[in-house]
Length: 483
Ligand SMILES: NC(=O)C[C@H](N)C(=O)O
Image: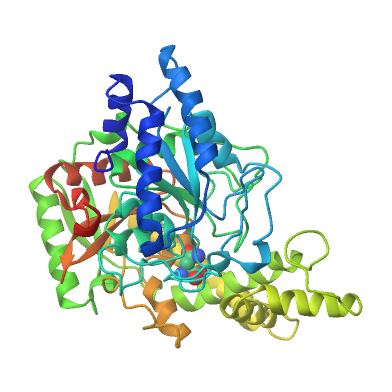
């Protein structure tokens, strides 16, 4: 059952080949067996899953429910789940049962999905390897010596190893696409504003966006359908109609114009380039046309991001003060001691580094030099994409500079860690949608290809990804140890 896509599982449920209870039991057993090795979960919600599954079976028996009814999945531990620990990968929230459901969680529950648990992640989504998690690193199912990527590393590893058929992730600078690439699955970062951020713990609010992670583009389409849409509780969610994503999958690629940014290929590793050339050849066979495009300011995206994201994080994370909820230090002497020790003990090193950078960048004497300048660069990058989309329908490039790196390889050098998001970050700065899909292997490790779309053009992105997946089987492969 764990090799099937969501559409196939839905068909199986409908045809009564198996019940949601049996299906959920199958995945819970796989989680129990493989969790010690992978550490993909922070919390497993077995009882809740069985209750959800029974409710879904009752709906299905009456002929009710939609395409996701009875489908088990797991949530990144950044999404608030009513009464269930929502840790965000941090000691700060280790004791925090959220008092309500995030909109994404509520919508997926209303669609009839079964909650298997909460997935491991980098602390407060700050990281590219899952090594900043308070709960320890996640292992890459393709090679346990390698990282799964981050920050949605638990989500990517759990899907890749067949512990869940699908999961949610969030992407501030690449956190859905980079782990999807490292683990050989499909992950979509929607347009900023497409999916509600309400109840999604804030890191950098002008960049954060939730999205689906699954085996295929078709599965991502089914999930996005349930996740997307206006939410009056999130003032940045956009009140625009949500198209029928499943219906858009059969996109005709004849004459589709795809841009290849020269800046993405200039210094690309030769093995990575070969994988992408093969993908371009497949798209050509399907009728797409390619042209080189120029994104002149894209080289500034990592430095701009590492001013803007820490600035916003330093403001958002000010709320963790030991007073209202979350971690509180023992026996504080006075209020200042409470603040100081709570934050010193509750946050890990990477979170502290970013709070310090952000506070510095926003301070009166440096505001213009750093924060304001970074915002101007952000505009230039968005304008580069705007110009490109006047010429092309989609943009194709790598998701990452290399396949998954080794655990510990970059933990001593934050800058080299930040550079692993060099191809994904500009998309967040511009607020555009992007998808990573499996495109091949290098030395047994999966390689991701990234497609970038114009604002709110998720349907075309999913369609182009789906057509590629109809003629390739990279997304169907499972690591041997988890077959
Ligand atoms: N949150 C993300 O999208 C991951 C990015 N690597 C960061 O550390 O900020």
